Image (cartoon, rainbow, N blue to C red):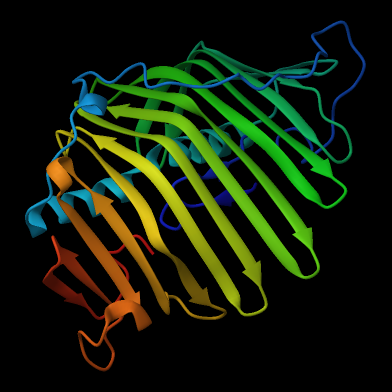
Length: 316
């Protein structure tokens, strides 16, 4: 499995089915569909039960910034669902194998059918859920319908791909709705000892009961070498917990040195309605604010709000 968490970047990559289907191989000749999966031209915010994507919220206190940071962590839920459903399916053997199509029985009478158009180096998988009940660690028992596509192509100097979520379902124990819809894509290139990772999310929406989360227009770039990783990002962060959306961007890219857990420099701006904003300033960019052992400060509308001695509650 390949995974990068949204605790580090908004544009995450989570892969279903690699171990179930041979980890990059397993496609074989059959009468089933062997056409390559095509990347959708784009994805848009379509669910948005409260019209949150049209309501930019103002930032005036620690209450708003705390809600933003919690919502940022919630970005991982769609990817956790993917990972845990993959684990639940991979724990069993297929009930039927027909060429490049594998069928798995679920915990109820439902099924999941995986069509594999992969070769020795690249993956192309389509997961189709039909009233499929599975047990997950985070969400408990869920029943899923819909599709998930994953494509990752190996290039001479790296790899590139995309994943598509189009899932609806129910949490069995609470009867809460669960929805995951959207499109992620990535490109990872290595040259001269430098790895460049680019992640893009046109739109990704996740619903759990009455809680709604989405990201849109997200672009994240990581440049990694022996000294560490340099990160830049921009995204629209949307959620019911905020009652609307804010914009996130790096005014100055964030640098995390090798073997360090917190950034040594960088400035992240949270942009709200009416020109309101907050900034997280890391390490060297704290401008002398804070003391020995402090790793970052939060400013709201240019006024110091909080000093952090760890980066656990922050975006990086």
